[in-house]
Length: 351
Image (cartoon, rainbow, N blue to C red):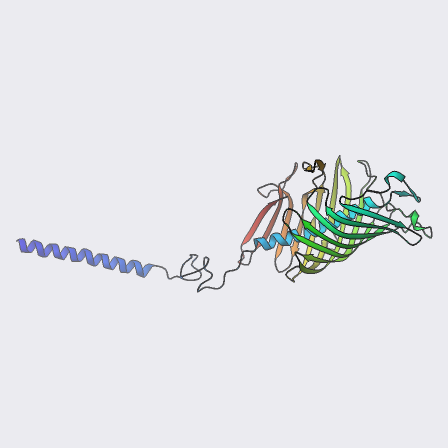
């Protein structure tokens, strides 16, 4: 009897062991075979389904897209700032008479030389130091020549920038450093700015009609010592008060294209403005620098589309969640694109 029990116990143990072995074998048999499309980081992959035995991983392009947006914005903003400096630096003239004591306004960390003769009215601004708000250091020169088609054969001293159709030719040779990032860019080239309907930025009040400037030209751009080639510009700036807030509305030229050229990676690109980009002077709190307060100009609405090998949409005037802000100071702007893996991505950045 005792022997029978031992035999039965042995048989039961063997049955359990056999079942376990079969179960283990079945489990291993049912395990999925590792592959480069199993959505699992395995078999020595660098990232999920790429690297190691799989195809090379596509690098994250977030920084690249941030750079594409910032490069165009930085150059456009700087050349616009020079246009504003040029408008303020021109003698305030009316029928050849200046206003004497306040003949022109000198930009921060710059000197202004004005030459008037029978051939032209020319202003040279030499920059050598910080911008008024302390955000940029500028070194170099811009030369502004004013042409006023309304004066006929009169001496050019009678030229007035506020005449309808008057235009500025601006020659750039300017090196700029952004203080916050250390990024540098050099602008060499020529722009033409036409005062489309006439009017004076210097004399603008809350009841003045808008001043519209059409800006065209070609500039060679160097970004962080890397040549980005020639950029062609075709934009319109409309400056006017909305209530007590001075605003600048930017639009593109043909097919809404505002800038075209070559990026620092050597890729052809365009920047279009399908929805006008509106900048506000007083929506956000002022900036304080060295005891002085300066307006914080920010874009409060609008859309730009950068097209190269990839397409990047930039929406201005959003909150921290990337939603458009209807009133008040916006947080920043939103970037949207599809990366090399076909994944839609977005990023919200502060002003």
